[in-house]
Amino acid sequence: MRAPAIVSAQRLKNTIRMGFIGTGNRGSQLLNLFMSNSDVEVAALCDVYKPYTVRDRSQVCPRFLDENGTQIPKMGEVFKNSVDTYSDFRTLLERQDIDAVCSVTPDHWHAVQAIMALKAGKDVYVEKPLTMTIHEGRMMVEAAKKPTASFRLV
Image 1 (cartoon, rainbow, N blue to C red):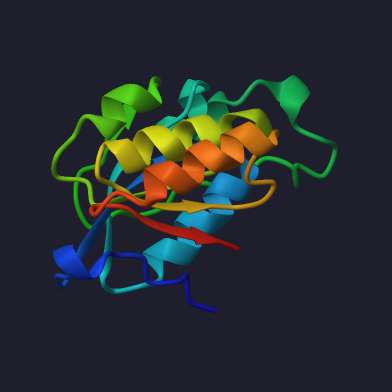
Image 2: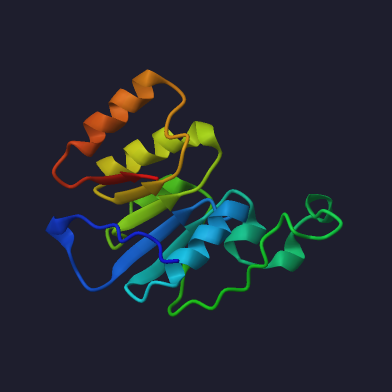
């Protein structure tokens, strides 16, 4: 299964440089899915929990592991290039060399991060629930109307 190609026609190029916001369980699944695309380059990872950004499962607090160890991703991905890490998604969004972001955070952050990414000129991949309120949804629609924005809900 391949991840969807996400890029606006205005910025079409051979490689899409991606930033990942949230690299826990589902974030790791999507990270690996996007990495399976030859036209995707992972440029940055962001998570408030450092073991997830440095991709070192041995640093994960043992209380987060179930007895089978299945709730924490395996990690240990091999990246084609050096990948910068952040604990604050706003710093990641400031980077001009990142084309798109994949936001995989707790539900109440989806709209905030998507709106800020769109305003920063990034294309966005985010999963449901997209918003917590109708007002957030309206704000996302307005942010997506900008000429640099591209948005996909799956």
